[in-house]
Image (cartoon, rainbow, N blue to C red; front, side, top):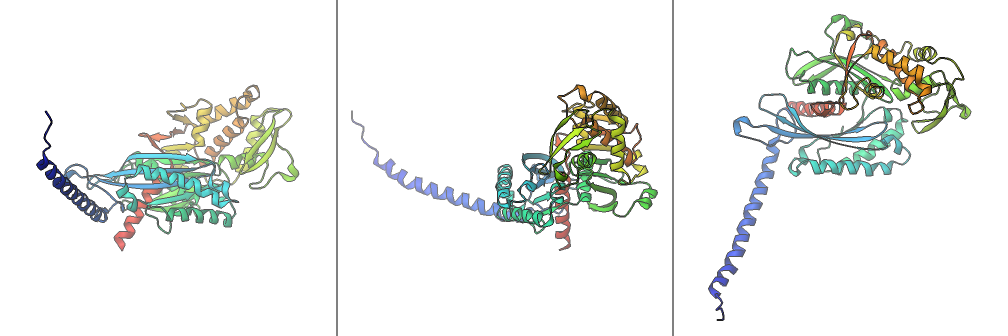
Length: 445
């Protein structure tokens, strides 16, 4: 039997379907307008950034984000941080996304336009990681370290200007101070904030803080919170700095030694000069390299020919040479020997490379551990051609640098890359301090 079409149902469908579509569209548009209208009210008094509420009204957590670009000497990295703040408490870090690209910004000193592609690529990572509604309230910052500090001023500024142009075209919160070269003290202070934030030392008054040692390629930093009045009185000019965080003021001992990072120190120990090729292309001969060793080493885009002396032991003459490089360059703070310290970057890498700590988990070492490793490597390096030719030199340098800082041989240093699965770099402290500063400015305004 042929089915008779139900024309009444068809007519009803033709009316109801468009009407339902219109109602749904109206509700969706109303929701979007309401959601966006409420976004400006989501600035919290502590964060200066957007937040949403999770849970009930009485247990709401304010969520906010921050983006920090670390423009180092060997690469550019982006850190995308997500924070949550329970009512009346210190914020906590709930998530971090990290990406890195090589080479560093300084490699584009003579071709500034090429730097934009990598920056944009890392910005896209942030876009994917941060919900759209938070973009306009999320601070975007780039801080460059020793790699750009060592460039001629004009070249460095052109690179930073290009980065700023790319940032301004992004949908994030971009201030006039969004791009800058960190001075060494800021780098040390930011790393100190990171480590004390992650260990819980900033959560309230009375908690004991920890010190921070960082050994980069171009510079090295030491930062701690002095308790002894004598430390404050004996500190040279430029070694003390004030930090405001969570309505508290910290008077920190912090100094950065430009030129005493591991790579710059290698060059000085070899007899080279920063930013200059060897005179007439001559070979740099060092008592810190194995007898008979000959090779090439690239530093700051310059290739040097290097070789070891023909005969003799390594440790004693190398230690003598390193002592010359360090002489009268480092201030010794006696109190540092009584403060718990975390050490990062090349301290970690060196200790891991010679088996003093687990390469993944980190660990604790003493200054004497570095000294014993240095003696062993200087004695056996010639018989281990697969090893880095700089191990003897680097281990002696680290050992003597730590002694110059005032650490005794039995001083224990904690070496780690992560605390609670969060990278222990200066980037976290820098963006956290930046957000806190934005908030204070807003409160004053």
